[in-house]
Structures are given as structure tokens and as C-alpha cells.
Image (cartoon, rainbow, N blue to C red):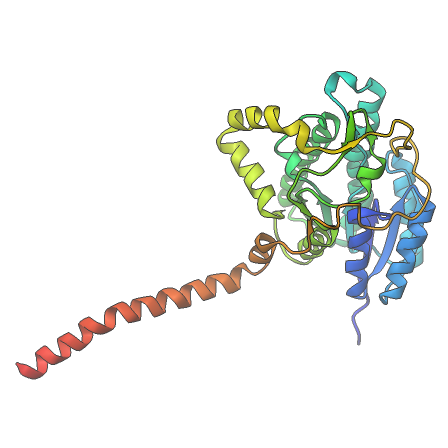
Length: 342
């Protein structure tokens, strides 16, 4: 009997990482529940999934509303069946110094980016725990460990998710639960958010180079859903930021104070009339990619290495064995000659 396709829910599925992740799961034959605020992008994501061979249901949802998220989960299960994987990806941000972000803007970023993740997790757990199976993937960031200037609201929300995950993971282990949770920490990505993020900087915002395409993130999310990893660091910049901050946080403070402002802005002046998506979606289907295709990498050597670490270990063992045999062979021959002469 053929195995039923997996049912996957993705928040923030209309664009960026969520959109790329929906495509990645669809290529594997999954049925995908697509959650986001913007109907135009959701319709585009549904077309993507169906074109790639999956089934999709769209549920326009503001993840800052806990009851709406739970109702969306019900709608997905009615249409597609029991949820196997839940991916919390929805986010909003504000680019500005701390003193230029309004209190209600801090609240909104926290409600979407952090509490939206909590509400999605709760909706998934309500359905997964009684079945004793399922995977919840949190889409994180290097900024979950290392805050940077001009994105304090977003960094605070990602740090909160990290702490929430530590608590939840320990509780699931205590209960010997079959539900698994994991977090994927991402580098800078070429997504449309830089076209619509709330911005009070003098120039247009950009991801901090080096930049990766959202498909790199999507590959990591799918891998994390399939493999028992506590956490994944995607891309060498993420590893460098997290490990470096643990070792020399004071240096990171000074480095970012000197370079973190220019690194997050292009040379083009900001458009004060540009719409942003903090409170409502920007109309249109914006796809997965932003405007930085010319400089964004489509492949991460570090991600390849972490997803092939057993093969690398086997190869390293083989090289070590070959080196040992090569080094040992001359002395063996010398010993054999000496025995023959004796």
C-alpha cells in the first residue's frame, strides 16, 4: 500500500523563504497548507505547489491572532488530513535605531515574529501530541544568537524563539514524546522583505553580505524536517556569527558598531512613500526572490557538508587509513629485507 503524502503547514508561505519551502516540499509530493496574510502571494504559492505535483490549500491568516492560527490548522486538516510537519516562518521587521522605533511597532514585530511562532507551535502540538508524532521546524536566524544594530525588534523576537525552543524541547524529552522540534538558523537571504520592510534608514535596506538565495534556506528546512537534528546552522556566515559571538562578543559589538550600519544599506536613497507590510500585506505576488539575484549564492558548501557529514566522516576515515598504510609500507619492506638477510 502506497504511503500517504506528508501534510505540511508553512506560515509566511506567500513569499521569500516560505514560498521557496513550499516549492521544496511540493517537489517531494507533499500536500501543503499555505498560511500568510496576502491572498495574491498565497494564490501564487498554490499554483507553484500544484505545478510541482503537490496539493495545496490556502488559508489567509495573521499569525499574531492565536485563534486564527488554530482555525487555520483545522482548515488544513479538513482539506488535506493530519498535519505531519509545521514550519513557523512568518515574520515582520523594522529597520531603524532603537530610539526611532515606536512602542506599538516593537509590539507588532514581537506579536508576528515571536508570538506567531508560539501560536503556530501550540496549534501544531494540539494535533501532534495526541498522535505522538510530527515535526515542528522553527525558521530562525544567526540573529537569534547575535543581535545587530538597526534590527532590534526582529533580533529580540528571534532570541525569544530560541529561548522558547530550549524550554519546549526539554519538556518534550521529559514526556518521552514522539513529537520532534528543531530550529534552522539562517544567514542573509535574497527575499522580497527588503522591498517592503518598514524602513527609517536614509538608504534602502539590504541583507548583510554574503547573501544566499532562499532555496538554500528551503533545502535546510526540508532536511531538518526529515532528520533528527536539534538545530542547524546554515551557511558559513551563520556559523561565524554564532560561534564568534560566543567567543568574542565584545569584538562583535565593536565590529558591528563600525560596520553594521553601512552593511545593511544600499547606495540608493530610501523612498519615504514606499508601502511596507508591518500592519498589512503589500498587494501583489512577490515570489521567493528579492532584488539581489546578481550577488546571491545558490549553493552553500557548509550546508552541503553538514547534510553529508556521515559521508565526510567515512571519506576522512578512508583517507586516514590510506595515509597510515602509505606511511607504514616502507618500514614493512625494510623489516622484510632485514629478516631475509638474517
